[in-house]
Amino acid sequence: MAAPTTDGLTTASSAFWADADRHLVRYAGAGDFTREIIDHAAGSYLFTESGRRILDFTSGQMSAILGHSHPEIVATVRRQVGSLDHLFSGMLSRPVVDLARRLAGTLPSPLEKVLLLTTGAESNEAAIRMAKLVTGKHEIVSFARSWHGMTQAAASATYSAGRKGYGPATPGNFAIPAPNSYRPDFVDGSGELDWKRQLDFGFELIDAQSVGSLAACVVEPILSSGGIIEPPVGYFAALREKCRERGMLLIVDEAQTGLCRTGNWYAFERDGVVPDILTLSKTLGAGLPLAAVITSAEIEQEAHDRGYLFFTTHVADPLVAAVGNTVLDVLTRDRLDERATELGAFLRRGLDAIAGRHPVVGDIRGRGLMAGLELVVDRSTKRSSDELGALVTRRCLELGLHMNIVQLPGMGGVFRMAPPLTATEAELAEGLGILDEAIGDACVRFGL
Image 1: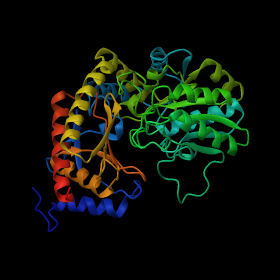
Image 2: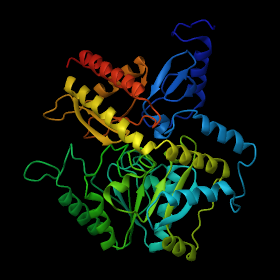
Image 3: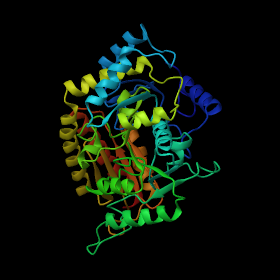
Image 4: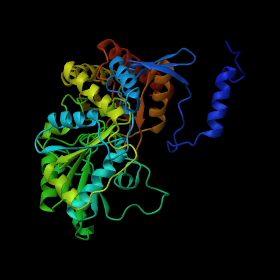
């Protein structure tokens, strides 16, 4: 074993961080890398080089819905990479066509045409590009707390972070307020969120700013990076009507909510609204880079007739398509939509119990195995504290739980929880216990 250095690290790990600090570009804004060297992962756990076991309540980057190193995913990768991994982008393979057919089979009519890509940003880029071409218009509307990716069109439709300092965004991008029931900006006579008035107001502003070229509205069913905000039932039906009135397409981005995480195969099913274009990523590859754009035959035909071009290096790659087929196999066979509902109820009961013990828990929200817990220092005023959230996050990691916290202006620290759909009740209970202890410890140190 390597000898420890004066900073408490071994010689090998000290050299690792020296190399990381010297050579890596920091890409998380003001955030820094978690100071753990991850050696391997299995199921719901990460394992560090130092031998620590960390419970992963984020499924990697909200992606590994089958847990880490799922044996069937591992077997598929080993088999497929040995036979056919990548092709010229104009060629097709059976895994690609099989996955397209099977995805269409999980969706309501008329969603049946599939484009397979790599990341969420790329799928949103392709969807926005298609919407602009088909409608002949260029203006895009999205939520003011949105996150759709870091490429040009996707980043221009992203408002929760990353807008300052990069020069002009794509012309014609507009934001509407996100309907946050916990922190409502429009209220009715009883003080509850008046989302209908808020939506009307939002589109009054859009109409005032538009040059008459509204192409599409792109939205997440649950705004994740926006703080696990779920619009009320009825909102998306009303939003779709706003789009129809203006000749806009509705694009639904299910990067994190798609494929059973919320208890439905797709989160939009709750609202009985079918998007014109659906984008999938993260969960589709269960941690590997696989994404999809899915639309109707009518829209695809119009796009094709107008010369739709989205020819990329890794479009329709067979390796990740084979993984996507295995993901569908496991989700269907193990009924993970039902499991997400059951485990989500277990998680919610545990979070409610934590809220009962700690007044700093202001709100609990989400659906299925996608949950949010908002911390405040005063429940009556909903006053937030970045320091409290950061303290709880650090303490969780010390105790063996990896948590992700969203901190946005005007909101408290919101923990995003998205454990694998394969997690056990015992693992969820372990995470809840650590979170409970971490909040308690942080409150003592914070003087609350």
